[in-house]
Image (cartoon, rainbow, N blue to C red; front, side):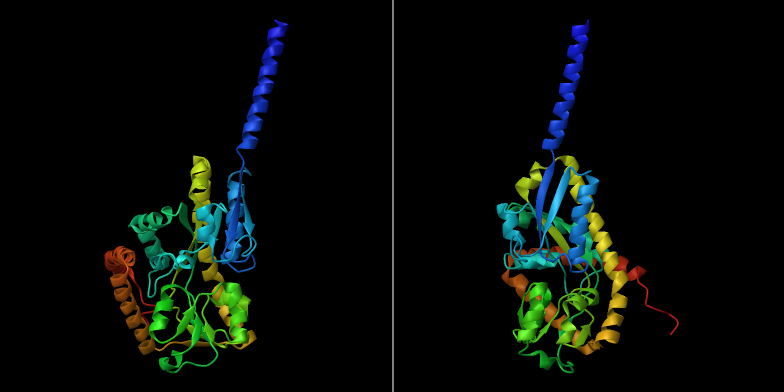
Length: 353
């Protein structure tokens, strides 16, 4: 009887040890490259919070280590690194992958585009995600949108722009589909990572730039060289980012860890968007009062020129690129469907004038 009891106790202890060993072995540790540094408001900050959330939600069983741009790979090269498995995950944006597929720009920001709700309704519920996933999965990449920020400014210029002809011949950092619009107006555009913009302005490699919004732009110090900040950000009324995940690593995750990652993603999207809306009014005021930035607004007739050029870009690029045409059709179909609802419930800023 004593022997049986002793054996039972030993068996129980052994089983506990096995469970502990199994739990230890089940821990997942990933490296995450970030396209933005940890000190960049919202874009970088949210990457850190996203990684922290995964650790908390998993009670430490799934941890993600943040790596600064350049620590593992250059800032904008998450696509190739995750495709090959050099890193498990990259915190980035589809707009940095337009060299692979120009149509991917639709999955970051669209000129004269929708609100965040309308935008994500297209991606999550009306065909956008299916096209996005089909593109990335061909390269062994799983993606999900995890980041959102509010409207951006449309440029920092050394001089006031009274006539759009002044844009002709300028060298300007410009992002996404808006760059195609600026090219139509005679601007020579290039895409630079955030940390590369100020040195390029300082050395005269570029004459002007757009990057983001007051809360971020103020940190980069563009105002030291270009004092004229133009609004509205017709090219990026809403901007969204994503994580790129090596598909083999994604498939190796437990169902629970997949849910944890997806939950952290959606939390990050809401938090980052609301935060940018909360801080930009104060940052905009600070730029003017403390640094002498001149806030300017494009005239309606100038914005009409941008819009006309955008429509031409859509037509031309759709004619030359079947994938671009497919994404355009899906996006435009949803916007048309949404417009009746959107118009019906829209309010003017005030009815008391």
